[in-house]
Amino acid sequence: MAVQINPSILSADFARLADEAKAVEGADWLHVDVMDNHFVPNLTLGVPIVESLVRATDIPLDCHLMIEDADRWAPQYVEAGAGSVTFHVEAAAAPVRLAREIRAKGARASMALKPATPIEPYEDLLPELDMLLIMTVEPGFGGQAFLDIMLPKIRRTRELISKHGLELWLQVDGGVSASTIEQCAEAGADVFVAGSAVYGAGDPAEAVRALRAQAERATARASWACDD
Ligand SMILES: O=C(CO)[C@@H](O)[C@H](O)COP(=O)(O)O
Ligand SMILES: [Fe+2]
Image (cartoon, rainbow, N blue to C red; front, top):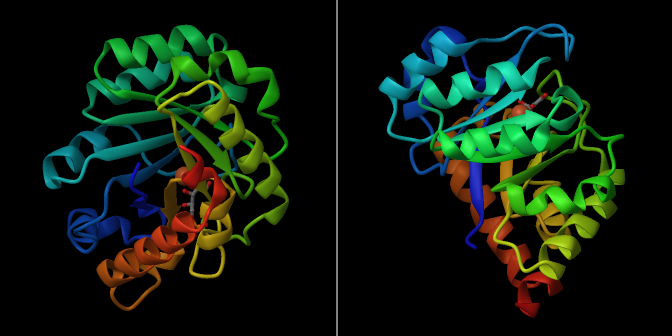
């Protein structure tokens, strides 16, 4: 699969979200961080703003839910128009049922793992998912330093995806920048969320193009991508 670059609007100006979405034309998905001040110690936005963003941009929305009670709330983000909905496994009581419900309602189903959550217990769930998100910072804030101790988890997840012959996308989120994106791509990630590296740049659309070029070059030399 081609690499995908998903700018995170957490680093955008929340008073100008429609313009900020236009500023990253060419991005694959717009990454929307939903935080409830319970699952993470920060509060962002909810269903009504997602509904407005869907109307304001042609870029599909990749909603990353950092909220408790994901079983109850995630389906509402599908109904709001998100094309992909990511719930945290740590916040879901019934992740398989929830993934099936997200798919049945018409969105891509995605599951996220905090840095201390291992992938191995969830190997059998992978066919139920369209994307797995490996957090490369503790969720809650943009602009944190990339946790390179997550690279082995990315590699092990890529091996599981290959072993089972899955189409699953592997997303990384947190501290992804020109300095770290190549390591992520070489380890096996193919969907890259970048907040401060895109919206902190003078030209966000150019930052998306530059990150994509870097990720494509790194993927081309990665052994995991050559094996299929
Ligand atoms: O989910 C989160 C943070 O919890 C992310 O999506 C951040 O918004 C990424 O921001 P940068 O680390 O790229 O600045
Ligand atoms: Fe995120």
